[in-house]
Length: 306
Image 1 (cartoon, rainbow, N blue to C red):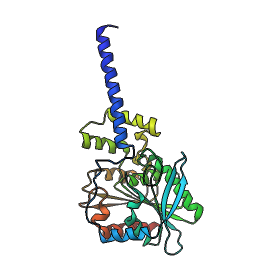
Image 2: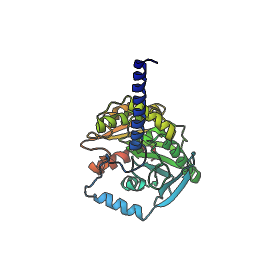
Image 3: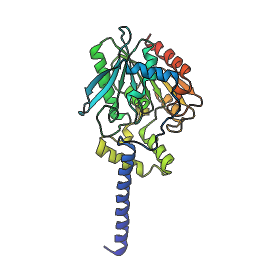
Image 4: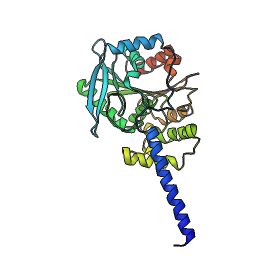
């Protein structure tokens, strides 16, 4: 091998090793469930509605558990309706959140006579897991939660409501083969795909292009967590959905860009509505206008679960 070839080979090996190191760093940064310095901690004063919902949640929940298909012990909080009902909502929380973040969403449905199930996603809260699935493996977990509800009540009418990563989880679940008990979905500021969202974040946080780091880190995710980012695509799943869905997004969202709303809205084949909350940042629509949020959600779900 001549000197030029050795230099070229050396440069190639250096680049490959560098990409592997960078890919593992970005995997740890995005996929391993640890404290994330890029997630802003909200410090605003709690609203009256949120304080009331938190107190209600603390005094009324029970714990449900299941074992995922890949052996993780998952936990959820269950809040029964005041009177015996066949209506149940499953509430999906966001990235690096947990079910206990969601009582204000739960209270909307409880006031409508729903039972409420609030799972901790794998790797979050009280559920096991050493990686974040961004909604893709979680969609299978949600099929199990749905089946657990139906096992307890074969007449159950089920709505899924998710926010941020939970919104993406709901959309990804919508493309699966679901029992007729599932009646409608509400997704709030979910992303169009994991590749699109993490490419956007790579640019926002590091000012780096998606290629080649995103495909390299996706490969590392496949090796370490069992899925490619390209698989976790809400748009592809929505194209298989024929059930009703309400899409909610704040027009000042700079974490999951507002432009993704149009992409996911147009992808679904089922009945749909769109609710844009002016001035709301990421996952801030309920806080920005709680009365209208509740009104929009109530009107939508009552069309399909009277």
